[in-house]
Image (cartoon, rainbow, N blue to C red; front, side):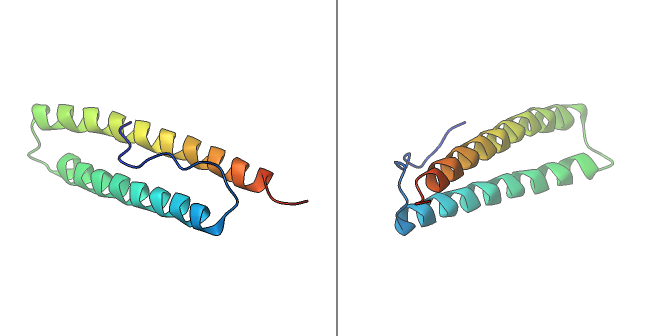
Length: 86
């Protein structure tokens, strides 16, 4: 996965939390746009084998990005909640 944004160090600071959630939302929007494009390609009756093959490759990449996003989000939440006072 290529990430255009720097890794944010763990902190309970509200600004850092907002940056992490903003990054997550932006990445989810990119994934949603890619999935919508794929749906358009795959729903066409006249889709070629090449188009379906490319769509399949992109699906794999999108699933990889989604998996990484879920993993990163889980780690971020564990870090943030782990630093909260008990």
